[in-house]
Image (tube, rainbow, N blue to C red):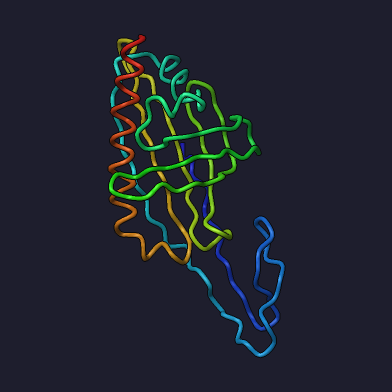
Length: 187
């Protein structure tokens, strides 16, 4: 199953306006400025990391869905609050290794207990730099699990994210290792 939606293609012509309110283009550029024909062509970059855990999916779910406990064990998402309810906004502080903390308020897109959580966050406005995050738990034989964390980055600033992408992958790996340790300790 493909858990990622296809990103929108944003086109503008002479009669279009530019500006955002949520996910809609709503306000115009000042008079006399040319309107871009193609703002963003849909190019994306994805970062992914997986780990096998000696604990069943329901135990991994207990750990990963307890956002309030992230500050006590999670080296990448150092603070998280909110409800895992589709449509709600979370508040998450990311601390990539070697980087500065970043605060985001992503919107929850999907929650399937014991399987996956999916959200999307935007830098300033949708289409500038967006991150669609997926936390996926798969059952394995003998009561084990595979946890995969991925982020699909899109937007006009995606091309300038080299260091951020490598730090994000390192953050995923650190978080996955900590999740493995915490899930196995109480399994």
